[in-house]
Every structure is written in structure tokens, then in C-alpha cells.
Image 1 (cartoon, helix red, strand yellow):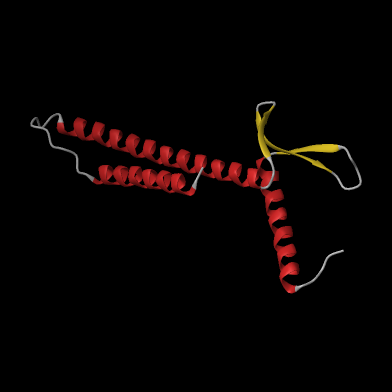
Image 2 (cartoon, rainbow, N blue to C red; image 1 turned 135 degrees about the vertical axis):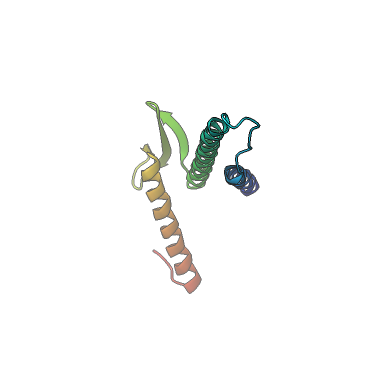
Length: 138
């Protein structure tokens, strides 16, 4: 997902949360019959509670989808390809190891690929620092 899509998703999520909070803070409407007022306000409270729970769940689901989309994008940038293996989301990469001509395919789950992405970023930063200071690697 692009940054603009993520911002739009965040805006929609925020709008839903604001609507749910505003809707939950509105007083229950009074009915003309005194005997039905408690029942109406109780059902209104249940509806408001279920609406706010649904909005909260929708916001959580939207945040989770955004995090998953960011992980997939970061994994692709690190050279991994998302695949479904035995019903599980995995991230695979095929590379030729040093000293060999045979390609090796390695697959990681989401937690492992996060660690690998972080390791690759640290290695990249170290190489950039060495390059900027004029050190040469052999």
C-alpha cells in the first residue's frame, strides 16, 4: 500500500471512531409513554454499546490490515515474496549462498521476517557508515 492509501485508511478509521464516540455520548431520546422510557433507553444503551464495540473492532481490524500491508511491503523491499504455505502466511527468498552455485530457498513466518528485515537494515546502515567514512571492505 502506498503512503497516501495508508493515510486515507487512518483518516477513515479516525472518522469511524469519532462517530462512535459522538454517538455514544448523545443522550437517549425520551418517548411519549412513561412506561416505555426505561425499556427504550435500555435498548438504546445496548445499541450504542454494540455500535461502539463494532466501531472499535472495525478500527482494530483496519489497523491490523494496515500493519500487515506495511509488513508485506517491507518484506518485498527486502527481497522476500509473500506465499501461503500449508495455510500460513510465509515470506520466502531464493538466493545463492556464498561458495555455492545452487540457489537456496528460505522461508520465514511474520515474526521471523521482521527480525530478518531489521538485521538487513542494520547491515545496510553499517555498510553506509563504512562507505561514508572512507573505510574499504575486503
